[in-house]
Image 1 (cartoon, protein in one colour):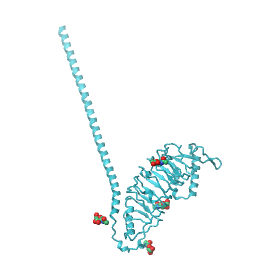
Image 2 (cartoon, helix red, strand yellow):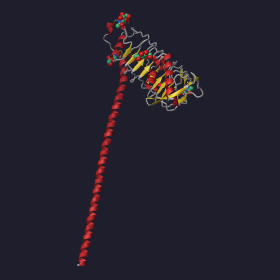
Image 3 (tube, helix red, strand yellow):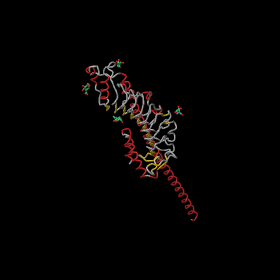
Length: 370
Ligand SMILES: *[C@@H]1O[C@H](CO)[C@@H](O)[C@H](O)[C@H]1NC(C)=O
Ligand SMILES: *[C@@H]1O[C@H](CO)[C@@H](O)[C@H](O)[C@H]1NC(C)=O
Ligand SMILES: *[C@@H]1O[C@H](CO)[C@@H](O)[C@H](O)[C@H]1NC(C)=O
Ligand SMILES: *[C@@H]1O[C@H](CO)[C@@H](O)[C@H](O)[C@H]1NC(C)=O
C-alpha cells in the first residue's frame, strides 16, 4: 500500500487531474476501509458528508517508511490544518484550495521533512512560511500560481528536492545564492528566460527547465553546476547568438558531452548558426566558465578533505583511547597482583612470627617443667 501511495505522490506533476482525483479517492477509500480507528479531524467543525455517509474532510495518519504522515489530500481545504499531531514528518495537502501560506501556516509542526502542496491555488507565500522548517528535505509546490518564493526557503540546511513546476516563477525568484544542498530542481513550465544563476551548486544533479521562455544558454550558465547529470532544456525558444561569441552552440554541446550530462534535447543542431561550423572545431571554453566550474569543484574537494581529516582524527582518537585503556587495565592488574602478593608476604611473616612465639613459649614451658 505504501509503495502505491508513494508512487502516486511522486508522479503528481506527470498526471492529469482526473487520474489524480480518481487515485486520491481510491487511496482514501482503501485507507478508510483498512484503518478506521486512525481517523482524525482535519479542520474541526467542517465535516461534510459525501456519497451517503463517508466523512470526507478528514486527514488520515499513515506510517510511511517509519515516518508519521498526515495525509490531507483532496479535502477542499482552504488552509493547512493546524491541529494535527505536532510530530508529523510528512504532510500531504495536495489537491486542495490553499491560496496563501502565511508565516503561521506551518508553525504547529517542527519535524517536517516532506511537504506536499501540489495542485492548489497558492499565489502568495509569506517570507517566513518555511523559515522554521529546519528539517525540510523535500517540498512540492508544483501546479500553483506562485510568481515569487520566500528567499529563506533556499537557505534551509537539509532541503534537497524542490518541485516547482507549473507555476509562474520569473528570473527574479533566483536573484540570490542558494545555500541549501539542492540535488533536484524541477522548474518545468514557468516563466524563466534564462538558467537561474544561484551560485555554485556542488550537489545539484538534476535541473529541469523545460517549457520555459529561455532564449539563450551558454557554458557559463552550466559551469556552476559541477555535479549536474540531468538537464532538460526542451520546449524553450533557445537561439544561439552568433554575433557575440561565434561558437556558443558548439561549445554548449561540447561542454555537455565533456561532463556527461544527459541533456534534453540530446544536442543542439548548430548548422543553423551563421558561423561556418569548421571554425568551431578548436574550441576553448571561456576563462569565466573554468572559474565558475572550479569554484564549484573546490567546494566538493574541500568537503572531501574535511571528511578525510575528520575520519583520520576519529581514528587517532580511537587508537589513543584504546591504547590508554589497555595501559590502564594492565596497570590495574599489576597493582592488584602486587597488593595481593604484599598481603600474602605480610601474612606469611605474621605466621612465622606467631610460630616463633609459640616455639619460644613451648621451649620456656619445657625448661620450666624440667
Ligand atoms: C513574516 O516573517 C518575516 C520574517 O521571517 C517578516 O519579515 C514579515 O513581516 C512577516 N510577515 C507578517 C505578515 O507577519
Ligand atoms: C522534466 O519535467 C517534465 C514535466 O514533468 C517531464 O515530462 C520530463 O520528463 C522531465 N525531464 C527529465 C529529463 O526528467
Ligand atoms: C540540422 O538542421 C539543418 C537545417 O535545419 C538540417 O539540414 C540538418 O539535417 C540538421 N541536422 C541534424 C543532425 O539534425
Ligand atoms: C584566459 O586565461 C589565459 C591563461 O590564464 C590567458 O592567457 C588569457 O589571456 C585569458 N583570456 C581572457 C579572455 O581573459
